[in-house]
Length: 293
Ligand code: HXC
Ligand code: NAP
Image (cartoon, rainbow, N blue to C red):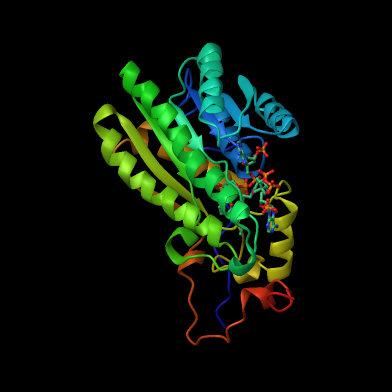
């Protein structure tokens, strides 16, 4: 019988396909860079010489991000910022410019999400997720783009997405709709701003579990049994794999790649079965009783 070996383990943490110093002298601005995937992405840029700015709301996340960047010897600035507020974003960019000069890379990583059946979602729950994930991403891109256009300097934007931008995401109607907007925005901005030297790409993680995941998301993963054996790769993503993809996309080796969304998920989003399994409602998957009770 053919052994099921899955997709192998990546190169070790600390390795990189890019030359050492690829980002020397550059500043990389990462929203939500104090936790999870944002912190992993920021770390890989830091290892390659970048000065890092981490922008998010919570002091404990900013402190965690700061200490991770210091561990790899990077210059780091943390800024309290709510990406729903354009003035807060402008102030964070002012602080970045003051510390390191205008960031040459923006990683729009911050997002909001929790599983909820669509019929149970309050208007404010919908608004909150769309406001952070879609509006916040645009507001940050706008601030970055306008500053580069005014200065006549090139730059690179990476919007972190999710594969349910293409497929829809049962239990995640708000986030899936917002991420569809984020992916679409990549394509528009890449065309509008390419002539000004600004590259815009999307980066879609598959399942990358980590300790910073919110209780809502961790609870969902535990409930849906989403583990290695449920992935075509027979494993989940390793955080550094996403960081490597991000550092490649914004590097001089990827300058002609723009308007593209790169999926790093071991083919999980294309997964289909030969025969359809029985449908299980989102309510049942979440262990919720009948609607309205
Ligand atoms: C239903 C919920 C809810 C839940 C919050 N709400 N959690 N509704 N189920 N589990 C509702 C609230 O009741 C409220 O509506 C509205 O959402 C806003 O809630 P607040 O707590 O006031 O919002 P805020 O303080 O701004 O916090 C935003 C948040 C929070 C999204 C609710 O979770 C957060 O800060 N998240 C940031 C980190 C995050 O979400 N990371 C996940 C990224 S992972 P009402 O009507 O009561 O006022 C990802 C992909 C993962 O995106 C894919 C994994 C497979
Ligand atoms: P996470 O650890 O919960 O990170 C979310 C980050 O966003 C936090 O650092 C949070 O910081 C920041 N944030 C949230 N709201 C903000 C706001 N209003 N203003 C500023 N910052 C805000 O989740 P993650 O798993 O690393 O996810 C990172 C990205 O990957 C997201 O775009 C997510 O959709 C995407 N993704 C993740 C997975 C996965 O398997 N992990 C899969 C698909 C897609 P504060 O709380 O300090 O503000």
